[in-house]
Image (cartoon, rainbow, N blue to C red; front, side):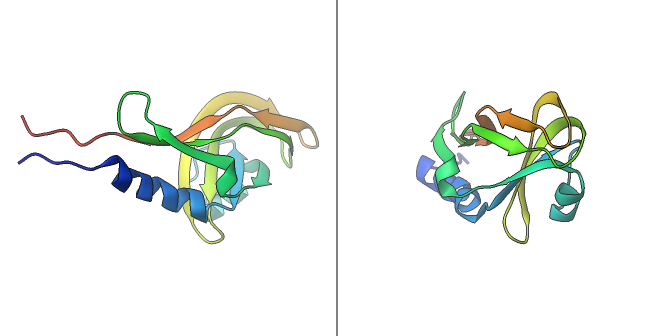
Amino acid sequence: MAVLITDYALDLCLGAIRSSAVRIDVCDSQPITRVEALANSLANATVGPSDFVISDGDIDGRKLTLLAQSGITATGSGDADHLAVSSATELLAVCTITSQPVTTGNKIDLSAVDIVELGDAQPEA
């Protein structure tokens, strides 16, 4: 049985993350809950739907990208290597970022980051 998931359906899933996101946290380890994202946060920023874009995936499917963010004030020190996206109550997504040292009080900039990519469904062989 072949499976087909349309770009429209993939966009609905990614759109739910985009419309629910209110905060990003630059973390020093991979959180698995919103509480962990807040506890491991080295810097954070308020975000909204306009901070994200949905587009074609790098190989196939669709992806959600956080647009570049600049001038985020660090609230902790350490090596930032993960980015967490949260709603007001839930952790929505976590991705790895290029590791960078962060020092409390300094400003950090983030290049555009692919948060999640959903591939096209593949037919059975």
